[in-house]
Image (cartoon, rainbow, N blue to C red; front, side, top):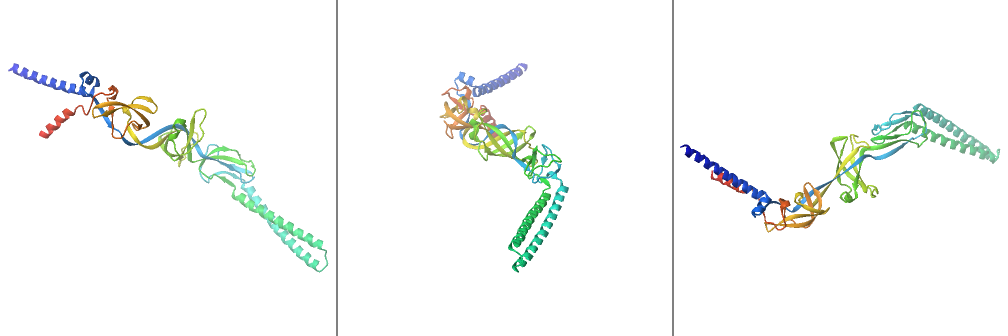
Length: 383
């Protein structure tokens, strides 16, 4: 009885070992090129179809944040500055006060201009009345013509003084209205050239502000990659100062002249900055994105590259022959590589097992466990 039991166990063990040996051997034949080559069987490979693909090319470059524009603000009048309300580096909002002139002095100047105008009006009326009387007497033949001419000259002088007084009054009113200098845009103070108590000249520069409600990220692009950058191209910007944020932008300018030292072009990317987080001088990294429709293959299929735009692939011919073929490549993106020449749509390239191949090798394609899967499927159907 014991002998029969031990014989049964031995038989089962041998059966299991035989099955395992078959599975392992079959697996090695279908997965190991070395084993398959020694046994003289076709070499196992995987293939991919050459097809048109929409590649999103991404080109990265470091750069720096700059203001959208620098604005020079000048004094509208020559008057004493009462208070400068901002300093270098301050962020300012549209219509925010930057400085204010002494309103008391401006109000006094307005009052004096109004008095001068009233005086000029009185002088003008008196000169006109005197001319009327002198002219009447002259027509009676009682005065010489010279007296009339003198009276007319006095009227002309009074009219001129009236015009001057009126102009001064208009200017004084305007100066009082412009007693505060404000920022025209959201900006950062780049330069401050005035202090409390000083009296600038009219039109003298007192501030330089950088507009930052939108900013420019200026990046250096190598000259051999400049053809990949176009005006209006989408871009994304990240900064070391805000590592968790990404800012969308658009290429608005490419400097037409290369830097002779670095052999790079400057590319300007416009980025909206509603929260004014992005400040001039921050280090940025820009990724330029470009959609590219092209014939492509998985990048892993490429072997033995012979240049920047040249490589080789193994192409499956007649369903079982691996042929080495030279190709010209282009854009590399998302694990795919553009094929510019050497392949046509619908051909199959080898993507797994190609490193062990030689030109003209017999190959086999498929799942190394396909026989076991078929057996399992049949058993399920029988049930």
